[in-house]
Amino acid sequence: MSFEVTSVDKKALGGKAIRKQVTIHLGGPKGKGPAINVLIYLPANAKEPVPTFVGLNFGGNQLVHTDPGITPTKNWVGSKRKKSPRGAAAGRWQVEKVVGRGYAIATAYYGDIDPDFDDGFKNGVHPLFYKKGQTKPADDEWGSISAWAWGLSRIMDYFETDAMIDHKHVAVLGHSRLGKTSLWAGAQDERFALVISNDSGCGGAALNRRAFGETLKVINTAFPHWFCGNFKKYNNNESALPFDQHMLIALMAPRPVYIASAAEDRWADPHGEFLSGLHANGVYRLFGKTGLPADKMPAVDRPVHGTIGYHIRSGKHNVTDFDWEQYLKFADKHFGRK
Ligand code: GTR
Image 1 (cartoon, rainbow, N blue to C red):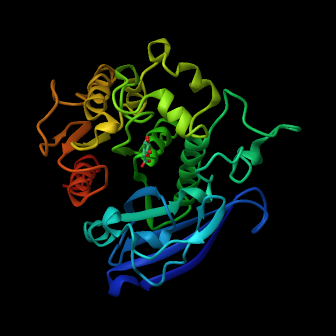
Image 2: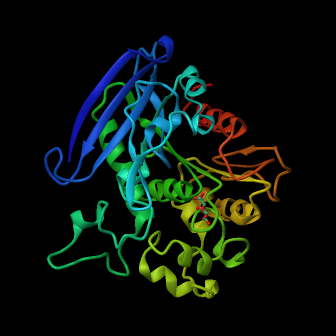
């Protein structure tokens, strides 16, 4: 692995931000293997290393802002790579708001790490780890979500080398399948000081045994590449699982973790997402922390912020201004900024 800083613009966004772009080369020298292209915005007036939000994006770095200085990432459309339009997901990223609050925000396209289709694990990072003669991960080895989480850890490796990033205060976040990913990244890598799951649903924060909305059979059929092969054994057989998702949430302890749901996102089972936070409380208590200070599902648009944060906001499966307001407030609280 090597890092290449490909551009730095100290006057980005009309002088409000510093834009930095970094390529993480994997599997040998530049051009030999996969590469993760990281886009970072830092507050222009930052005098010391800044706390940072990091998350993967769905369609290329140029989606997060109309800023013409963003080097477009070619994204996978089916098995081809194309460029998606600038700023198309700007509402989900709120770059100006985040840097205005004194944080950096960093992102990379998840398809740089592993494409999100069942390609037999040929095009992403998995082949870098095959033993001699191996052509795909074994049933107890990683799928795509795990690879995306691994990629987030490589971005963290870069942060540790960048004097402008306060790598002890990095919040990892993700939406939907990338919320499943941020939870797994947080569970695997304790360098992430705060973990945020936005509408992560099945395989993320939602309890499997409820089998409400998306079930294991449905998810493992529609997305056979997301999880390890062995997970399919529990299709229509959730009660045989030796774990459930509250244990995933508990793996963040004692670090702060935020679970967000949306009222119209019943596919992701909001109540199951809440319950996995609640039932992680026992482990937080072992660390002398409260965890989620609620005993029943809070009302819509009434966030609860303990060491575990939770809200169910009105509206659909998305990342909104309301969600970001909560994440900034939660990070301020736990990073000792207010
Ligand atoms: C859906 C899938 C969900 C969620 C979502 C997304 O099709 O059923 O588990 O991951 O995609 O990532 O937007």
